[in-house]
Image (cartoon, rainbow, N blue to C red):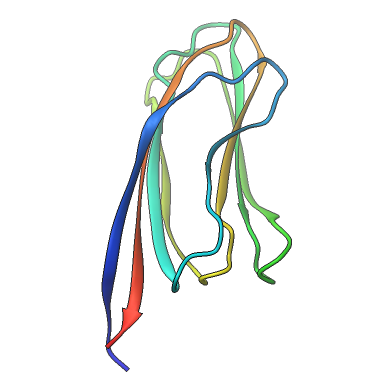
Length: 121
C-alpha cells in the first residue's frame, strides 16, 4: 500500500526547567495514524557548572512510555544543537522528549520539532 504525508505539524518554543525537575519539551498523545518525528534542542545557553539530561520516551505497547534514549551534557557546549533523529512511531506511540537541569543556573533551551502524520492511499 502506498503511503503519503497527510499532515505536517511544527512544535517550536523554549523551555526553562526548574532545577532537578524533569520537564517536557514535547509530549504527544495518540495521533490519527503512524507518524515520523524529528527535532533539535539548542543548548547554547549552557555555561560552566551547568548539567542537563535529555531523555526520549516511546510507548511501544501503546500504553506505557518507556525510556528509549538518554544523554547528559555538562558545561558550555562547543556544538550546542542536539538533534533528535527521525523516529517512525505508531499512531499510539506517545512520543515524549524531556529535559532536566541538575546543576548550575536555570537556563532557557529553545527547541523545534516537526512531525508528519502518514496516511495510506
